[in-house]
Figure 1 (cartoon, helix red, strand yellow):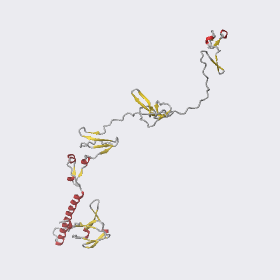
Figure 2 (figure 1 turned 180 degrees about the horizontal axis):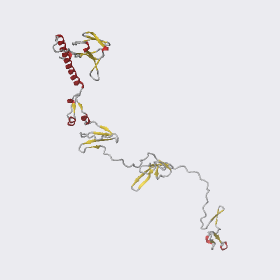
Figure 3 (figure 1 turned 30 degrees about the vertical axis):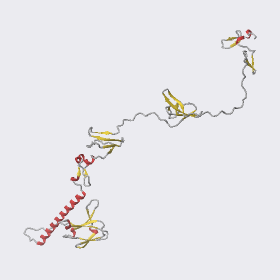
Figure 4 (figure 1 turned 135 degrees about the vertical axis):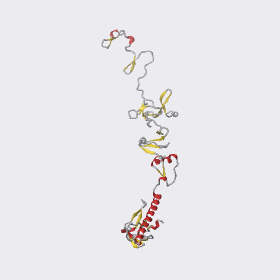
Length: 334
C-alpha cells in the first residue's frame, strides 16, 4: 500500500483544467482538493466552488491552477449497524469493510505524509547541537543540525550590550563589547570575571596648551605669548617672535644658562659704502676758546668778565624759606 491508493499530486501549468482521479472512492463527498502552502509546507483545502466533477474519474477547475496541488480521499465512516437476530446482507457487510479498509489506507498515508513533513521541515531532537557538544567541540558542520539556545549562547560570537548582567559564559575567551563605555572585554574563566583588554586608567588632568602655531609680532621682545588673549601662556622653547621694527625673526632657545631670543637667520655680508652726503648747516653752539680762561655765554658769544664762585666772598646766603640771596657788596672786581 502507498499513498497513490488514496491521493495524487499535480503541478498546474496555468492552462490545464481537467485532472484525473486514479484511486477508488465511495462517494463524491469523500474526494477533496488541497493547494500546497509554500510557507507551512502543508496542503490547504480548496473550496468546492473552485472545482467540480467532470465525471467519476475527472475533476474540472474553474480557473487553471498554476501551483502544486493534490487530489485526495477522506472517507466518511457511516457503516451499517446490525441488530441482534436481524438478517445480514452481504452488500451491507462488504460496504462496511470497504469503508474501514479505505479509512485505514488513508490513515497510513497520513502517517507517511506526516513523517515526510517531519523529515523535511521539522528539526528532530537528534539533530540539535547541545551545550555539552558545543563546549567539547563536537559540532557537526552541515545544514541538518541546529544549535540549542544554550549552545548558541556559548558560541564565540561577540556579545554586544550595555551590561552582560548576571550572564557568565562557560567558554574561555568569550568577547563582550560594552556599548556604554565603548570598551572590549573577554571572559576569564579562571577568575570568573570580564577582563578589560584596554587596561586604561581614568583620564588624567589636562596638560598645558601646545604651541598655537602662530608668530608673536611686536616691536619689543615678548615676555609671554599671545598676551591679552584666551591663548596667553608662558614662552616655551621653539616659540617665534618677529621684531616688527627690524624685521628679524627670533626663536626662543633654552640652554643650560636659561632661555633667550636667538635670531632665526644669519645676516649677509656688508654692502658697498654709499656716496658721501652734502654738508649740513651748523646750527649748534661753537666750542669755547681753549686758552685756560673761564668763559660764559652771553648774547651768542663767549665772554670772560662774569661772576664766578672764585671771586665771591660770602656772596651766597640760604634763607629759611630755601631761597638763595647774593650779597653784591662783597664782590671783588676782577
